[in-house]
Length: 547
Ligand SMILES: *Cc1c(COP(=O)(O)O)cnc(C)c1O
Image (cartoon, rainbow, N blue to C red; front, top):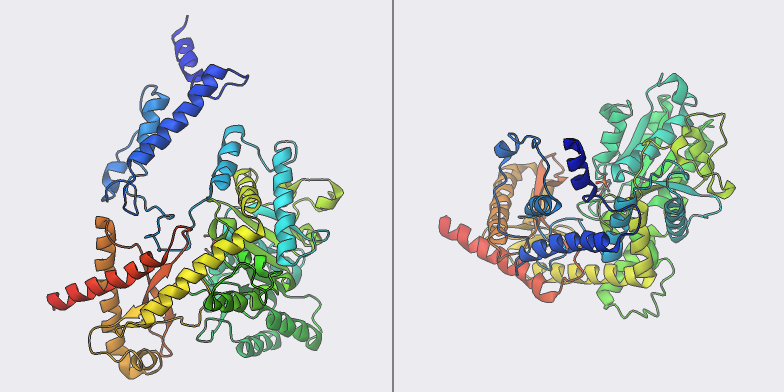
């Protein structure tokens, strides 16, 4: 037999067998078990896998493709090794960011397509997995207040991509034909100054340019000031500028701010009439974080059958007050991989009217895309050609596992824990919570050295430029507290939180640093909330002794 034939025989064993071969199947499953067993060996009480590691990129730069074949066993070991040092997001002492621990059906939803590799480009190449996409889109549409008979949607490569879609459709609405002719004008995108930078990324990549992203100031609770939005839109329209898309952020990343979507829509509609516009500026809701709270749209807050504590109920109702208007947006971005407990990447873009997707269809002579027609060919308008089935299958797994009750339970628990943390932090004389009226699972706070009046000073440093020097000093102090807390977490006995360099700007334009706890673990509980307070106190003591 020729040499290559020998290798081929070996390689064939490294693929799942195309026809049932129980012995080989068992070995395939066993390789997964072995990998998981190895990962398990990396677990301890610590919120991370294995030992804390210095990441050495210089070594990575020397990597070369090996000359010969390896074995599944050997490669499995190498892959697992790369997980060492990863934080375990599901650990109750992990509170670093809006990164969820994926649930098991979400993981299965990622694993199964990885084996059979459906391509959502067309129904031909994805069959029932295309149905998973249609089902998930319909379920979520209805949840958010769209009519699934009218609405449409598609999975894509992250929240950033949902903004690309939202802005691209807006461009086509205000400057029809640009999909052929390219841009001849410079339309603008309008969002709040707390919008995610992905809005700017999308505007830049679409050729609008960062200078054409207009940022409307926010109120202290991080929601867009609609009176300023109105005057800004009026100014733009008077100058003859075209408005492609207004982005309402429904759950800001750092502080869970929620823009008043209903009011924004009203302002938009009034201005269309007042200026007799021949197009309607597209209204996109960046709800990649907030969408999940739609499960409370039909929760009976008076009855409170899940028996949430009073403060939790108040917080949930506060979010519900804004999120219930999601259906008023022309399009919505959703990240199942944020507040839906799906693994990366699982994001979808929704349009209230599926016919809007016609605007971005490549070949306009072909049938417009509609689920309802049974003609499933998203490849005609999606930005991607190949689209993985992992996103929709993972999302479907998560939604079907939890149902509304499960999501309510999890979100309710996370908010309860965040409320507890805010209470405990507020009780500390050296700490000021920067988003005390917040309704979400994220808490931003600043720590001050001994002797600072935390009742008065946070307001003064925000408003009065005379405090710029002290602001800078305390920003540095917070960075040092964070380094101590982080070092303790890396040693394995602390708590993993994060830091944001600019959770907002002062009235005189300086960045304000804050520490951030984002509680996402279903395993979070009161004692781990207290651990945050304790870890910060230890950090303050160390800094005191270092002088
Ligand atoms: C995370 C985030 C994005 C970007 O989403 P990705 O899935 O990371 O691409 C956009 N907007 C908001 C509000 C976000 O929090």
